[in-house]
Length: 223
Image (cartoon, rainbow, N blue to C red):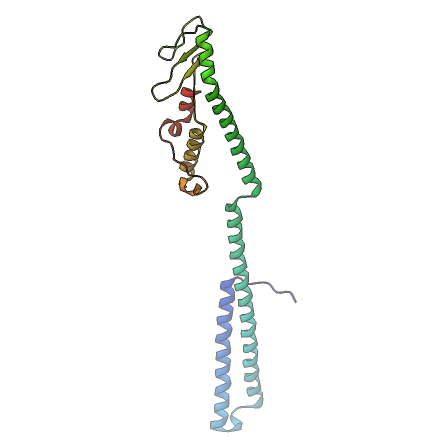
């Protein structure tokens, strides 16, 4: 036999109605019995008594059926809530593939920054020496002198190391850790999750200023 699951509210109402019907049928049967006791057997026929007893039994079975339906509806409701929770969990938990892709992107970005910045730190001193040896004068106000292929150099000072100038670009030493920390700080701001969530694996002393507020402007000055 195929049954159709009722909505929870409908199943609850069905049980309430069945209980009320059973109570009413039981009261009718009780009154008939009492009438026989008070007035004698002629007051109620056997058929009337049998019909009343059958109504009580029918009402009891209807109540049992309604209770079963309610239990089924409650379980369906519970399963629906669990499936909704499951969907929420899966939607917000992310996937291994997405996490791996993000890790690889982070790895590639860190590789580039470390390779470029560390190599630059190692080379700027050599480039500066080569420029001086080639007779390229020191730049003034960040501008290379004419007649030297757009090349110039500036000594360390004002909180930064030696700088090489190429066609107006200022190539200064940049700590890759500063750029990575600035990127993490910006990610922290964007997500609203503090950098403390990286601890104790990573302790980030978040940089302040242009590297975080305007990374494009900062790199334009340094790269």
